[in-house]
Amino acid sequence: MCASAVPKARTRTGRQDTTVVTAHGAVAEVGGRRVLVCAADQGVRILDLATGDEAMPPPAQFARRDIIAVAVGALHGRPVAVAGGYVNHAWYLDSGEPLPHQPAWPDMARMVAVAVAEVGGRPITGVGSWDRGVLIADLETGDLLGEPIEAPGGAPLGVGVAVVSGHAVLVTRTSMGIRARFLDLPWLPAPEAEVPYAGFAAQEETPPPPPMFFARRLTPHPHDGGWCMALGSFEGQPVILSGHDHGEIDVFALGSGLPLQPRLAGGNSSISAIAYQHLGQRPIIAVGSVDGMVRVADLTDLSALTIITTLAPVKALATPSPATASSEPRRA
Image (cartoon, rainbow, N blue to C red; front, side):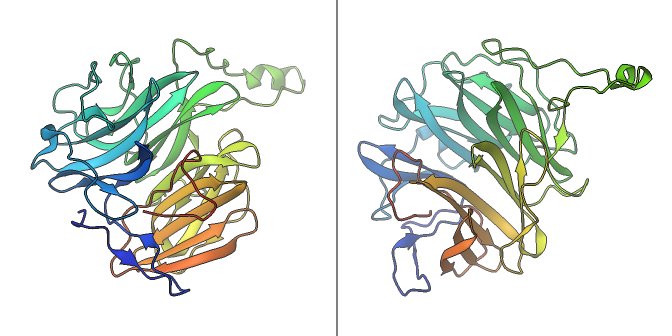
């Protein structure tokens, strides 16, 4: 749950300039200041990152309702948030007003994961539900886009959307793995058809390179979905980062489905939270573990920037977007 004020965590350098919140949260800029929107056991809290104080009241719909997931984005240049759990709601962060067209989630679709992304110039939101798979909606009209998408391996515990070679790609994390598949959106080109490799083999011809196929696995082991994931870009290509047991971190390229490098080491404890963002020109990764440690490093050469010690297992991490990031990384 979110504390009444954001507790300060002491870094190894002795400075107390990093905030820690053990809840699922996301960072947004509202009226020139950065705020943390976090899901909690009894609703949603919106905290000022600079002071830890309440920045604004949450929507009344969340009063005394358990909220599991939250994501932020933009609609017509205004900051918006989508949150859900036992109640699902989307609203403007700068005014608290609900979006005029709420996403048309089915009744009793309990969210366990949520993402907001702009794809092809249009904002969409994707949610993972315990019993309905992944649902995609147009954030402007509220309309559902297509049928529910089944997540191979069980309930989707994490969802993300990226664009690979002009095609929208949905990434889902379950307890049985992390997988990517094309997302068919009406305003984008249709995914490439599957290449009939059997025909090439029969004619002893060399087939073209395969396109990204349906439900590509993005973990080295077939039944390991890890504990957390984050999407981003590295060296000009979209990537997925995931945290696993024993401090192991995977970095896979979404386009090829191949690991970019051997598994990284983030300590000895299970990686329970991960965040990734470019701050200036530097690709910064922050990983939190169940032993209460947070490690911040440059992904290019894995040089450690700082190590933060907290007093409890780290449940979630958030970094500012490029528009709000300073030259010094902050983490919530």
